[in-house]
Amino acid sequence: VEVTNSGPSGWADTSGWKLVELYRVGGVDAEGLGAEELVDPQSVALDAAGGVYVADQKPAVIKQFGPDGGYIRSFGREGGGPGEFKVAFIAAAPGVLALHDPSASRTSVFDSSGVFIRSWPSSCCYWSSILVSRDALIYVPTSGPAGNFGESNDSYFLRYRLDGTLVDTMRIAGPSRTSEQQYWTLT
Image 1 (cartoon, rainbow, N blue to C red):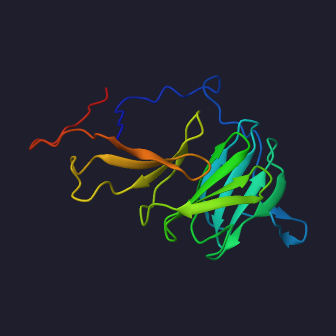
Image 2 (cartoon, one colour):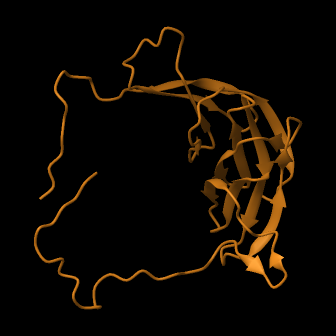
């Protein structure tokens, strides 16, 4: 998206919009590096109570912060066993955190205190965010059916229950391709 303005910006005074820091997540303690430090954050999830979960990749771990931004705990770890992952795309549902690791073709569920509950084989190699719906279905991106019956710009998701049961595959049709490129003009 490109927005241009050839005229004055109109932000000469300070009574307009302001950027205000509500709280800070991560950081360092008095000794240097703390457990709450974020080195390479890859995915973020918010729970209904305002808690923040961050999937850090160096090392692979989930860091949990409270609604005030204070560090609570880390859980999970790098590896291929139960509760372990190499890459984490996360989403929060009431009382649980869903995690998809596309490098291991696996989806896992942890409770809100970081205890591993279960995992199951799922979609491989599709490096994109996951979602959890209001009815607690986990949406894991996938490449779609063999032969890809839709347009190449369609999106596909495997939908799972929290117990790992596959519900269905959902296709979201993308815009039709035309020989003309489409543009938006903002004035």
